[in-house]
Image (cartoon, rainbow, N blue to C red):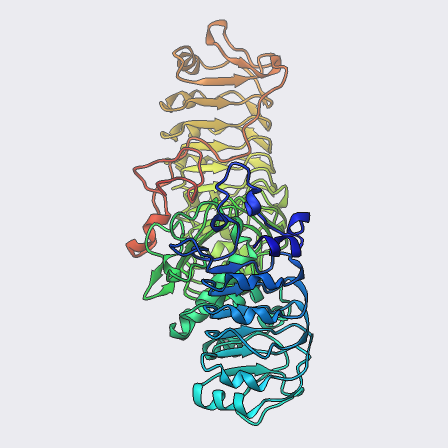
Length: 636
């Protein structure tokens, strides 16, 4: 092992990872059985003898030392693929009596093939070594243990010896080679390049979309790494076809999002050959599979980074997909439109960019769509109006532009609509929004909305609990219909261009707790009727054109410390004992936070079968000021 280390640049810090090799870990056990390797299981057997030397894709550069033959009492797997190894294959490796698999593919090896192979060898991978030359030794016909040999993308030429053809015909040896270079008079597997595939992987390859087949050309792509992992699965030929495809899609997902760096996966690591993929770690509340098919993929706050692969679209049985609070970048793949069974997508708190794909409009069963807190650009696709079952549409704090599509009014089951903090998204509130009869929480703050709010719109919002329209350019008078919003607990109309009187009907909002009216063009007096709202705790009316005196009934609430009242004391008379907060005397006048309104108690939406309920907030467990779909809580 030390000879391999020095022969291939380990001492020059060329390896991607050399943790603990030659006790470089400092205070770690210097036992070589603890040195870094990519093996899935133990590196050594119970006697402390090395059984698995797996250093694939680890930037080894140099020749293979013949001293590896000294591992002959125990080594069963030698995996050195995807490195920069050169020189010939040492003849001494034939002495590895226990070796069953040797993968030296995709290197820079040269010279002729060894005439003698390890006696127990079952699989030999040499593809991608273009400078290997000569012919296939006839002595390989004595290797009755051989099951698979891959010589594609090499310089091997000539013809397949009759002795090897006997193994193909009698022992079902699979010999993969370039038949344009090598004459084969028996049943060889012919292909110009690639890797040895069991028959189930050949079938999978034929079914893969063009974009995946193109990605497989690059040996370093997530797709190639996933296929490489698949072909080494000792049970791959036993999986049904749907699980073969499912495992490939999940493995591609793992490599694309840097799975080796994910946070603690408990005792159920991904890509374990010993586990069914349904037993790999997820955040799912329930078992993630139904009848072996993956339907719940949730990996929140797990350290996922980089872009989602197009192969996500191969997981067509998904019902729930949640990757909240990771470092996912790039665009939402268009292939997400293949996942027509999805009920929930939660990709909030990431770094997604580019425009939302129009293919989202194909997800007609979707109930929750959450892309809050990303960097998504472009307009909101009109196709979202096709999602008749949608109840939660959360797109806050992105970089969306354009106007609100009229088609969003088609979402008549909408309960939580969060589009705020997109300061280039504006226009008038679509007239179709009057169809949102079940809306519970509407956040359209910090946008560029203009125009009036019609009486019909206030009437449509009669059942709403929380309304945030702050920091826009809305104008006109607030109609008396606002008095219909009897369930309202939070209203933010801060920093708009509303005019006229503050409607006395606001005094009928018996459940109201918070009312922001500052920074508008309201005139007249503060309505005495507001004192009738017994639960009102905050009332900000400064930076308007109000006049007169603060009503005594409201002052009484302030004196009892039941209400925080903020006014412009220079123009609106506040009695000395009223204890008003004077905005015009502040050094830095405060403004409402542009984030989620507070307090708010989202009620649990009804979405059909109880199986969906774990993903939604519980009515008896209010989350003041939080996202209704926040997946970060441990009890979600």
